[in-house]
Length: 335
Ligand SMILES: O=P(O)(O)OC[C@H]1O[C@](O)(COP(=O)(O)O)[C@@H](O)[C@@H]1O
Ligand SMILES: [Mg+2]
Ligand SMILES: [Mg+2]
Image (cartoon, rainbow, N blue to C red; front, side, top):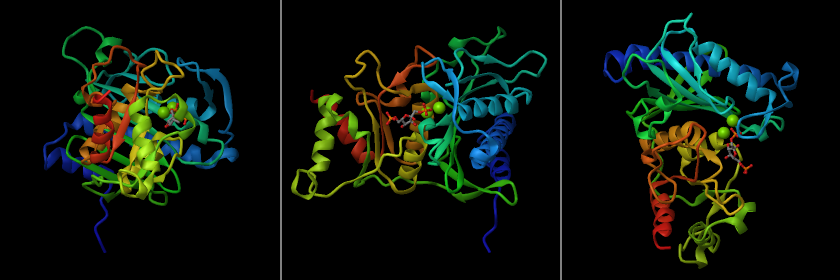
């Protein structure tokens, strides 16, 4: 029987054998994984745990919060604040940063997360997830400030997501490829189920919310139009479409079998660069996808090269199979 490798052992090997991560980062990732395990349990209980439905509050982006958005946010904060690895955290569900209180030991990392991605799917029992990104706090003795978080995605030291679906799967990169871990509920541990994840460079599957078609910009329209023409069109092959409306689940499919995911800028709110958030959705997903051999752009530039100016900044996202992302990005440079 193949040897079972737990997440803990995998991370210890990354630290000791390969020297890829410092022990503080290893411990931090273990805490995040533990928090994801708790969130997974809450998700699984559903109506029995009283966790479904709206919380009758709004987050900083003016979106109605679900009970699970708030629960997941609290689980992540409580699990991480006392461990001594972090200086501060930022979340989709909090207006400003959460500085680790000084009654706890202070660490050198910054953690950003979308505690519950795909909120519209919570109540209908469709896959949802948690997305996270880890940055290093800039050197210096002063206290941590919001501007310390405003680092380009290329500065991330770890990124991952956990998808709560038929299985709970944690997907992680520390800059040395992508590994997947499946939660063994009986043992209560994440077990390595795939290493060196690779996204095929070509695909016949795209993911986009087609109901926004009339609002898209010309390059996105052209790309999708060509896909829809199938065998008879310029692409010479039929395409399939999927849209789960949980980025985490759509990206997980792409990690597993390839595809292209798009949430582009559109004319509904022309002053917003996009719907998805740069710091805790696009950056971690962009890095994971690149680490698996795919690509991630906003149509004009690599996601990981974007210099953020705001914590909750939004961005247009095109990511997945390399040749398709390059094609859509190329269409943007011809207009
Ligand atoms: O409902 P739409 O417009 O298709 O948007 C779906 C997108 O919105 C998101 O749900 C945003 O995430 P949150 O649930 O964390 O706000 C993405 O996961 C998903 O890709
Ligand atoms: Mg989200
Ligand atoms: Mg969310």
